[in-house]
Amino acid sequence: MSENFDAFEKKIIETLNRFLVEVEVNNFKGDTPWTSAIKKMIGDLGLSQEFNCQVAIGGFPDKYEREWLFDIVWYIEDKERRLKNLKLIVECEWNKNYHAIKYDFEKILVGRAERRLFICQSKKENIEELFQKLQSSINEYENNSGDRYLIAILDCNTEEEFYFKTFTK
Image (tube, rainbow, N blue to C red; front, top):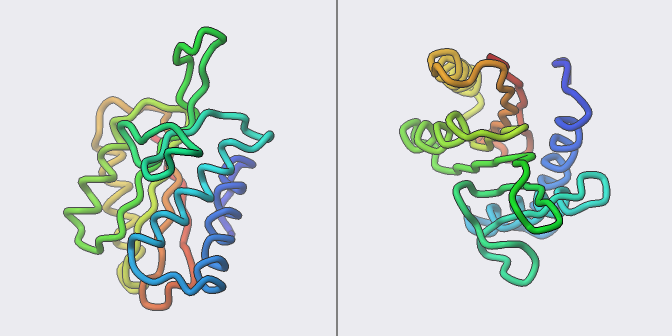
């Protein structure tokens, strides 16, 4: 990692890299098992003592609140269970089509939270171009001054490595 990631981002990166090990060990195949595994690992990180957040994720009714607005939401409530803050919003899109990626990315582009994470995949030779397109979207959007985005792009040629960048407007 040559980029200057903060401690929060490093925890997310560690989790995503651990996810790749889990994929290999458990021989996960296809988007559905990958999505479930990644949601669970990021959800568990949010529930951990380190972050101590409530977590909303679809597909895990016995563990997390149901999904709302985004694929994953870490949030804080007050003692009366009123929403105080969104700590993290996450969108994950495995479709390699740019229009599908753009559609999900724009959800976190307009979302109000302390942190934003976008996970997708691309062929290795197209990863840098995809980072540039997403950065261009961040720069063009008018209502996100100061917002920071962590983007994780999986090399779909090997499925063995994420590439990470942060962008702040």
